[in-house]
Amino acid sequence: MSQECLNEDPLNEGGPSIHASAVKVGARAVLIRGPSGAGKSRLAFDLIIAGRSGVVESAILVGDDRVHLATVGDEIEVRPAPLLAGLIEIRGLGIRRCDFVEHATVGLVVDLDADDAERLPPPESLKTTIFGVAIPRIPVSRGYSPLPLVVAALTTTKS
Image (cartoon, rainbow, N blue to C red; front, side, top):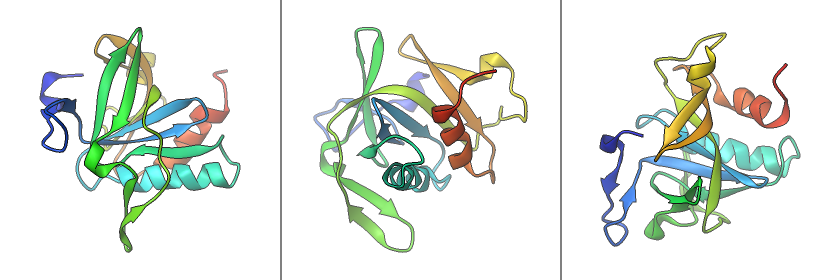
């Protein structure tokens, strides 16, 4: 992760944060990155609904809009910005309160509006590195629905 993605967060005591959302699906979190308006909150809520309907394992919000990342051993942990914990934006309804977890280990990164999204992506584009830790990644092009890709990544295996 490049240094320009990290910000000193006024919503915390100066710890580094990123503009992203995260949902814990089963044992691991899906970290959702992308520019403003790309659909991070929408995908987060779609994953929560998919968990409630049994399409994926149980899913619960970690954080929406701004999350904190930290290296814990050889894994990346994500946690919500304290003042935003339990809040999610739902377009058409505004900011809503929902259940959330205090932290989760990142197991998948979804990059919305990714310039390197392809129909048959090369293996190197399906990984990203955050603080030296390699994590599976899904690049999603602008205008393409990310939920089916994320569900496929969480419920299928590579052939």
